[in-house]
Length: 418
Ligand SMILES: Nc1nc2c(ncn2[C@@H]2O[C@H](COP(=O)(O)OP(=O)(O)OP(=O)(O)O)[C@@H](O)[C@H]2O)c(=O)[nH]1
Ligand SMILES: [Mg+2]
Picture 1 (tube, rainbow, N blue to C red):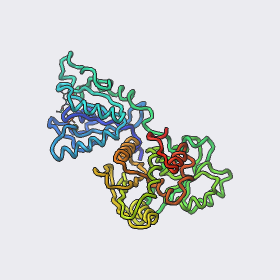
Picture 2: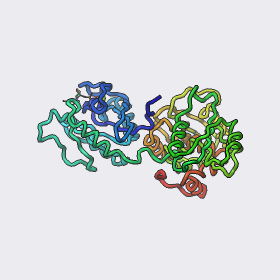
Picture 3: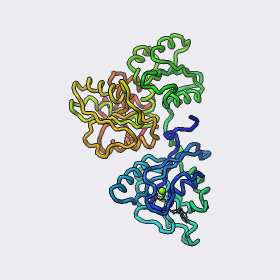
């Protein structure tokens, strides 16, 4: 419980050809002997995550990947995973075997990093094998920092850590959840139904993170179940700055909360914090273009056992079908991969993405945009289906304007609002 979840860590992916020393370098950087290292090319198959504190950056996670030059049917599957890891990384370390040198694979990783505006560092590994004069490569495309290292002797590893700290983008964590909406002394009411879907004995991650931001902003939190909301609002002697509800209690919370009090949901807040709220709002507008029989993908990043009236399996399909006036064809995708072929889907309904890193979520959204598939998240969709999206977006700077533009027939901005 003391560990920072992976989704909240700066993500540093190590990529390169097979046998260049990626796993050895992860071990050297983290001071652990956890990753399997061997002279056999193709030792690492799936992405492997290693968490550590890298001060002054704070919590980071290294992602050790399979070699980009892996071949055969399984190799293709592995490289697809590697590509997804790269797309979701905040920083990419391109590990080159200095005794082999630079080649087209390295060019390709550089090109991809540039196309995705990813921070890139080149680790020129196996420096212990190299004659002194051949230690540094020629100037590389995009002019990334190049650090000669030896994962085996430890030479250059400290310098690599220093360069990583320098290279990490400052805005990697994205906009706050709600801290910028508060001033010290404010009260925020949080509505968190503890139904059969809630985990036993604890709160879920977005609720905990929101509580922490409220405390950091010098504000106060009043945490209630939906059946105590009315009492809580009556007992507060000053109007709360904001009410934040779990999307599942949106209808009731909207009814109970006086119109003068701003109201939104955790999922709508996370649409800005972890994603591109303008794109998700654009997706909400596509709901009115759906017809019975259309294919809908419900994408859930975390694996949980669906029970009862599960939001993704039951509640959202029911609400959507009521709106469309007929049956829709649903596909459920659980985990960190989206289906390879997205072309048939008329809409993707995504979870709040609290278990995904911000870059990971943005990479998924970019893939959907490139495939021309509209996407919305649970909270934005539920608010829109209940006819309260105007209210739910109201507290979030820029979001209501994006929604107005979409309703007026325009397209919102491409980049996530800062
Ligand atoms: N001399 C020397 N050998 C190294 C160094 N780094 C890694 N090696 C060796 O290179 C081989 C491959 O190392 P790994 O760390 O497994 O390489 P990898 O890139 O993770 O390989 P795959 O998982 O197969 O893609 C092993 O035999 C390591 O001992 C280094 O700095 N110097
Ligand atoms: Mg490896």
